[in-house]
Image (cartoon, rainbow, N blue to C red; front, side, top):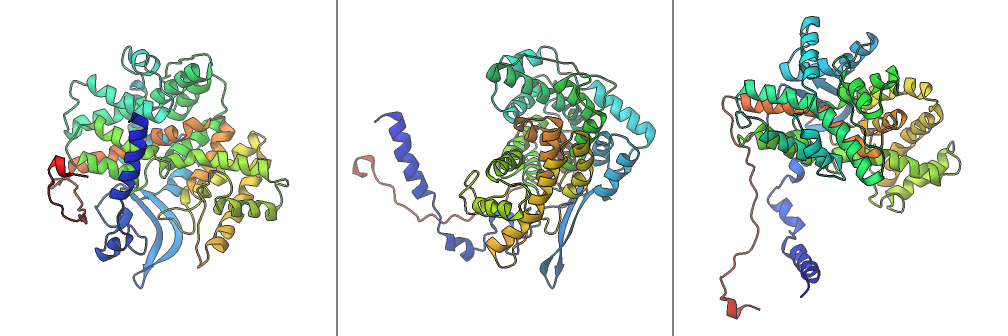
Length: 450
């Protein structure tokens, strides 16, 4: 039998042997996806880092409320408006807040930003050996590969003391933008036949400015573009310990493994299309809607096309309207609210107001269409992916960069959760239980098997 035929046949067998009767989940009270019957998350740990609220319990039932996101107890809305109104970049102080539990003083922020800036360069020959020689078609995979490769260059890679893990964390936070920018240029060179450009990080630039410089070159971006990218990084930096990738970081770190292995595992989770990878879908979906709706100002036409998407008759056939809905947020996603407000400034600068108005129209109609289609009072709100996709388009980012940008930001939250996990005095290996429901079998000699 040819290998392909064997794989096809055995795949069909696997589907049968791996199938589990749905009734058994009810019988054994299995909380699928670690979620309770009321869709709240199963309480699996305690943290001081991030807090996400989208509902309150009334008579032991979740009641929707406006979404809130806190970093170390600080409302991200106040954090974002604070540095935005002062016309400063906020990502470095957000990283400081997440790692150390407090806002930095002016002197502390200057020192921390300097430490990050001096850590941006990659080790000697690393760019050539790990990014240019070993080609890659996906930046997230290249990022994970580079992260694991850095293990080999760290003389204290397996040292899990808090001081050493902090040093490793700062290095990775600083180096991720460089790895992502170089991986992007490498991918474009080898697979899209574009010129290969490698720009070295600059000490005087902020994280957002540096990334745009390495990506596009000097004088190829506006101050407002850099500020919006900085805001996107701040709003994606952390989202509580229960999100899939941060929980992965906690689970893997609880085993006592090294920082690089734990980080690669978290990146693998973040890449998934049901998690961080969803942000790539928004601009593609919006482009398809525009191409298939004759009058972009017609709410009826847009609503009809959104129904087609829900019926799996349009876009990618999944029935999902990307950029809407969230596991915790009900009425609103605070990140989307902040980003929408600031994105309008960028839309004006880039002459994209017509597109911005179209986004607002879809934002208004999608929850209504969804509620009518699903019935029983089903509600969804705009999530952060919706307007971050719009900002990415305005800045000139390509779809391949959206999830890596997410990783470039969320690594700060990953590192904070790893440090918290390792600092726990009574740390235990995270090990939930699975109920085995397979029927028992007797051994049959080889010559008597069917």
